[in-house]
Image (cartoon, rainbow, N blue to C red; front, side, top):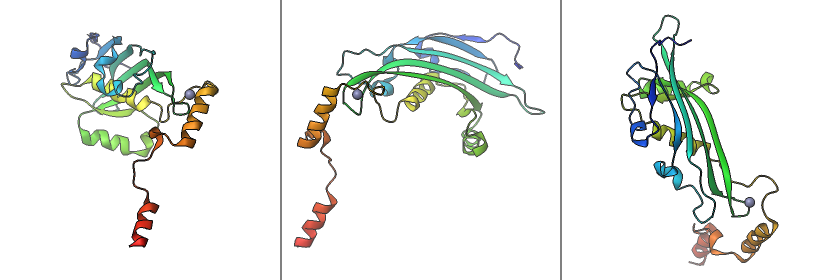
Amino acid sequence: MNSNKTTPHILPNNPKDLQSIDLKSGSTFVGQGALDLSSFPRLSQEIAFDSNLKPSQVHWEMSTWFEERLGGIPIQYMHLRLAVDLPLHCQACFQPYMESLDSDRDYILFDSEEEAEEWDMDEENQDNEDALVCSETFNLLDAMEDELLLTLPLSARHAPGECKTEDLAKVTQKLKTGSEEIIIKKPNPFAVLEKLKKQ
Ligand SMILES: [Zn+2]
């Protein structure tokens, strides 16, 4: 049910314009496009640079709509679909590989931080839409980047069976000989204890 009968505003595929959208105007918005990864500096830091693999553009689709609540003010919703291919480091064999991120989510836009938090905290809403705070200068580019960062795998890995045996062997070798990459920088608590005992 779309309570807003006016035609939606079309969002341009332009990073600057996407950084400030008036979501309090009562209008609805729709847009799609593809942006270079350079528009997402925080996400860019997560990729494997030392590889021949090149990230794809970030493909996006966004739309907003209002739904009438019984006797209440209409709720504003936003749908955001994102897709990008990123080179990441596999945590098993330490080699770069291509990870395809794909995110498809609905959000509810609240007027205040308090209302949004209340929605997120309510366990009944765990499987439902996420909450965002709506504003006259809503930064969609930031919201896209936040969502992609959340979509990154906790432990990046090749698909099962796709790590090369020789790369895995190299990692095993390094673990045995103790290369710099895996030296733990924290002071060893047992070494500290030993020192205290000797005093
Ligand atoms: Zn691997």
